[in-house]
Amino acid sequence: VNLKRLANDGSEKITGLPICRDDPARVTVIVSSKRIGRILIETKNKHKLVKGMRWTLELHEALFEELSRQNALRSALRMLTLSARSRIDLERSLIGRSHPRDAAVGAVEKMDAMGALDDELFAAGLVRRELIRKPAGRRLLESKLRAKGVSDEITRRVIDEALDERDPYEDAM
Image (cartoon, rainbow, N blue to C red; front, top):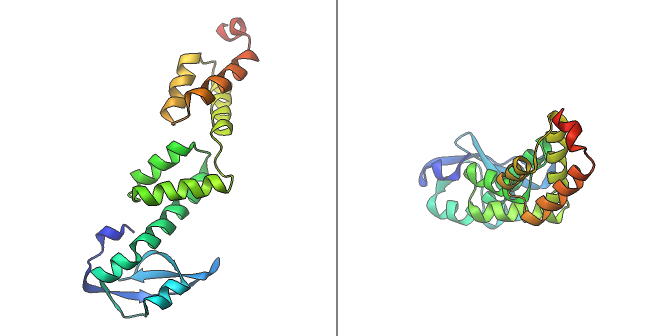
């Protein structure tokens, strides 16, 4: 749920704060039957959150950063579960899905620190898939990698390695 779509005038209420099954240190915040994200139990206690409490502007501002960070991180995990991505592509996708830029950058940095992002491995996989599907020239491969946010240095290295193993005359047939 986009946090900006919630009314912050006190007309909506917290309707649930269940403990997360997969992370017992967090609770899911539910406002007017809409799941808006996860926060640490310490945060819940600090703000004295209880079921039935009104969702106000002050509460929104107090929880916005943590909720945004957690929501972006969960989205990043889901995206990377579906397919490999470059750092820039993941960041663009998170921002495109209405995550604040700070939260998107933080999620990308966390995924990188965990070893879930590797631009070179991503680029090699993309080039390999393209060449298996049908022979492709250097320019096409470069443009595809550039569109995904892969650096020029990595692009050159990966394409050189992939094309060195191929026979251009055989590909032309």
